[in-house]
Image (cartoon, rainbow, N blue to C red):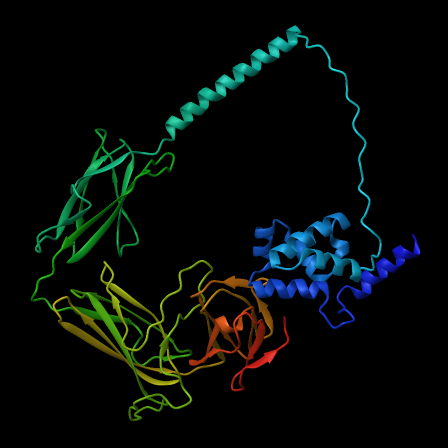
Length: 471
């Protein structure tokens, strides 16, 4: 091994992650900061650049010996620099400088050409003819078998003949309706009813007809109809949806049952779910009123204490990636009643203290029904709501000092809301501080930095949020 090779190995072991003499960041740090500023994780970068995560990680850590070779390394660096918006030639010059490579470009390796074998005359022997006939027979057999299997596994046909239209209205006194139609004989027709966990099942007769009487309630009754082949499990390619509406009586007032929250309950965080059922109602409104610091019998106050934020909404549990974020309700928010008579609000994020929550159901004619629940919010530990607003942001989370989620973090889109709880501390690193907003134990802190700036914040109440250097 030459002295030049020894010098190159020493530079790779000691100087991979050192900064340049002029104070500029090293190439690994430069690549990492460019990716975090772009707001993507290594998994997303792999999908966009077609470079494996292990190679991208080696580039960002300066472990060039984990890469397949100098030629591949230069290609990876060039493509990754273009993807991150960096000058590829400048990146390659810095790579050569940091690895101590002052030599010119590496010589291209030209492999020897293979020796061409002279062509042989085509000969047909009896064994070749027999093998060809056997192959043709096997191919024909599999073609026949495939056609039979395809015909056998064809999805069943399905049609609805009653009602004749997908949206249908009956008389206000109607309590049931006979659904009927046609389908492949022997298949099973499933009718899913909103609000029921188990579907209704009926077997299609030998003449291809089916019928099933379903119960109706006032308002919209939606039925999802499908046909399934019980032997293959294949479903119809064209499932049907039928909506039958039973009008409400004008004189009928709405009924209301609030199942959440439970009256008199003390909650360990401020994410309070508002759920229930109602009849003859079009909308439901919720109003939260602050009653005091939590002492029983305390006189109601017009607003929370000066240190508490007004009640705002937010989800009570973390949402999975890809799930649609719920809207944030304000006091007095109204939601529409579902087709099955149920209603649910995105959980109210309340501050500590005693609260009166009033739920009001309103019919289309303006008649109302109300119920009130009194609860107490007593925070324990750290309860942090993280909302992404203004644009996407890359997030990395530590709960009580332990990393939660992938090592490379996760990118969340605009409108995403997450909730984290811990015993002592929560630490959040965000690739865009201005797009990341925080609510700590029910108190809205807003954004703690500027858009496009990567920062790490430590939440350990009662201390104020503090910026850290964790990455």
